[in-house]
Amino acid sequence: MQALILAGGKGTRLRPLTVYTPKPIVPVVNRPFLLYQIEVLRRAGITDITLSLSYQPDKIQQILGNGSEHGVTLRYITEPSPLGTAGAYKFAMDGVNETTVVFNGDILTDIDIAKLVEFHKEKGADATISLVRVDDPTRYGLAEADSDGRVVRFVEKPKAGEADAFDINTINAGIYILEPTIMDLIPKDSNASFEYDVFPAILDKNIPFFASVMDKEYWRDIGTPANYLSAHHDFLSGKITEFDLEKTNASDVATRAEIDKTSFIGEGCVIKPGVRIVNSVIGNGVHIEEKAVIENSVIWSHTRISTAAEIRGAVVGRSCHIGRNAVVAEGSVLGDKTTLTDYTKV
Ligand code: GDD
Ligand code: MG
Picture (cartoon, rainbow, N blue to C red):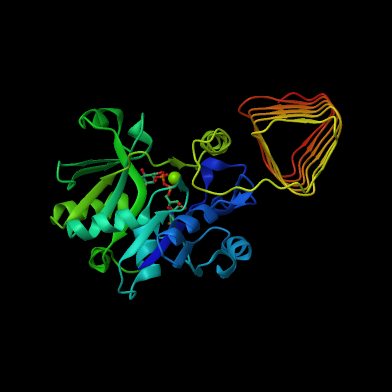
């Protein structure tokens, strides 16, 4: 069995964070995001993983290497131009005559892939899709299955009216198990989408297409700043526990700095007296001067936060400079190398 991670999107909705860091490797609790997906696949015994890339592929390859450090073998395929989700699958996996697990590259989940594969086999499916319940399905692919688990309808990004026609709110979780037969439905070297082209074609042709609805598993698309920040809060509050995140003690923290138990501090940070850090993740090599306050926020590596600055509910990119007494308010997202002069409010 093989796996393919679709990681070629531009990450537009996560800008400005993705200007210098492609979405698949944005740090989540100080770890490149794709390592969580790699771990989920490895747990299911799937170690041959292809990464389908298009945007800033070199940076991703540089960070993840050949995979040996993470117990897997990584193969990289870069499209000359984005081919869409299904086009990317065809481009990367044509000729690989094996069942393939396909992952959208921006899904944080602790799903048990081995169980999903078992379900796929039991049903004799050509394609299996994982579904998850959400409150507002209009931002996703809405899918409905019958009582036997057979997919009966699929609408990508339904308009509010279209969504009303479904009396369920189970959406495409962005995880598929596909048999090589699905490859025949995708034209070679042209743009094609699973969501808009292939799934409707599968339904049209009555090909065995099954869905398994997540129950207690954790699931989140990290592709917007609000979701990215929420994913961190989910880790800190213990909503996602399947990954071992070790806290290191490799920073210089003043005894009179206050850091709550939930926060994570990277390596090589300098944290001065009177600093207060609550429910936050601080990257490596961050300097925080006296009396600065950081609450419910994510700070990327090598940023400097000056005396008495206040950051709440925000994401601050890499190598930023936050001036003295500056205030960064709830919902702010600062791209890499942003400079805020003293007393600025954003
Ligand atoms: N290689 C490659 N080439 N990858 C691509 C391309 C492409 O042309 N286009 C998108 N991707 C990757 C993105 O990098 C991302 O990891 C994944 O495919 C899905 O694309 P998104 O742009 O994040 O889609 P979405 O979030 O709007 O919707 C998708 O995910 C939802 C779940 O989060 C759909 O699959 C929905 O049906 C689903 O509900
Ligand atoms: Mg997405």
